[in-house]
Amino acid sequence: MEVGKNIKPAAEEKTNKATAVFYSFGEVGSQLSWYMINTYLMIFYTDIVGLAAGAISLIMLIARIVQAVSGPVWGLYQDGHTNKHGKFRTYLMFLPPFLAIFNILTFTVFPVGGILKAVLCLVFYILTGLLYVGVGNAYSSLVNVIAYDSQVRMNYSSARSIASSVIGIILSAVAMPMILFFSHGSKADASGYFWTTVICSLVMVPMLVLCGYKCKEVVKFSAEGQSGTAPKVSISKSLKMLAQNKMLLIVVATTFFGAMGTMLRMSMLSYYVIYVVGSFKLVAPVMTVLTVGQLLGSLALAWGTKTFGKKRYMIYNNAIQIIAMVLLFILPASNMFFLIGLNLVIGITNAAANITFGMMSDTIEYGDWKYGVRNVGLSVSTLQLSVQAATAITGAAGVLLLSATGYVANQAQSASAITGINILVNLLPAGLALLSLIVLLFYKIDAQMLDTIKVDLENRGELKK
Image 1 (cartoon, helix red, strand yellow):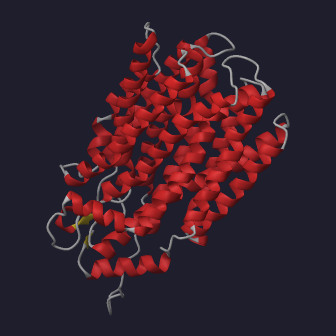
Image 2 (image 1 turned 90 degrees about the horizontal axis):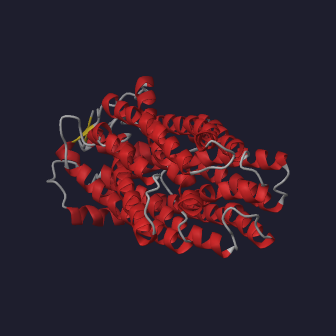
Image 3 (image 1 turned 90 degrees about the vertical axis):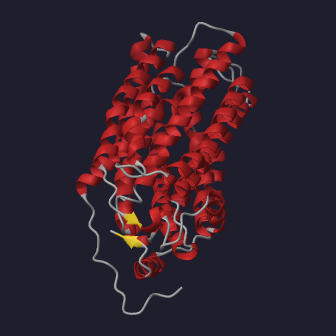
């Protein structure tokens, strides 16, 4: 497709600082909702609830498959329904209280045993995940309708990343101390996990509600979300066009492998610090260093993506992260300089994962331009699906791999178990990051193509500001 003659793009859009702040609140709420589950649920199941590895693996697999499947369902529903608040804001304004309730129930130990104990864990985890996916899909989709310009959307995604880093630093620094405080000792117990989750959930609700209330959906598209004056596209055609969008599929694939590595590392990192490094008290400092690094990386996102482009900047970060994780695997875990320094580098490069949200926005524009179909919620849900699928696989496989190392809960670990945990935390995530980098090499959307897309869509009358 060629740019229409004598057509100039609209005046450059400016980043609204207030919108950036309130949009970032949504990330704060999301992190408060999922941090405990992402970081401590597995160790809560093994060391507190006392579930067997096979039961945990099955719970993780079933719950996360349900979450993964629910993403496209949420996306299709959100794309097809609009009210006075728009397409996506409603879910941020009204679902969070219910999400808070089920977050708390997920970290509740009920006075039951046997199969019933495992069933309750599964049910509450599934319901929490369903609500989280609904809120998360609406939040990630929202950036596509609160700004028109690709770089402005990337700037809002950068604000999201900064907020993620800030709340991550806070949670990394205070979560384990809070758990130990409410446990009334030097070892975490059920009460500690429960009350920490209660506090996180109570703070989460107003953050998400404020994001939904303050971030107005200002960008409108003709034909209720479809391009031109064409009738509303059927679900089957939407799915078919989605499958043909190669750039979208590349972003989904690179996100899948990257998320697998990150999720596996984060779910196992507490085991690494407690049993390989040898200290409960170092969990908070290591987690804090990671999130401080992520903040530094997030602050550089707007500059990095504008200077190098989204693709190249993400490749650079992935390569540096791979080197850091391999070094951590090789070097002694007891060396605090390497432990802290290399985790700081990994944290900085972790921030690059947020570039995929900006790339996703670009693939939505690309899909509208090339195929005449614009399904924001469905496209975003596909990205979320890759994350949920990665989480399902790492959640189910991670606990089995941990068991295969010879890990024994609440005991000093054997040499083989220590080596196995080191592989799970450092070497295997490095391999997954390499796969993510390789897939990314095939991504073709750049600034020049985006200028062509923008002008063509304006010329065809498909964008309305």
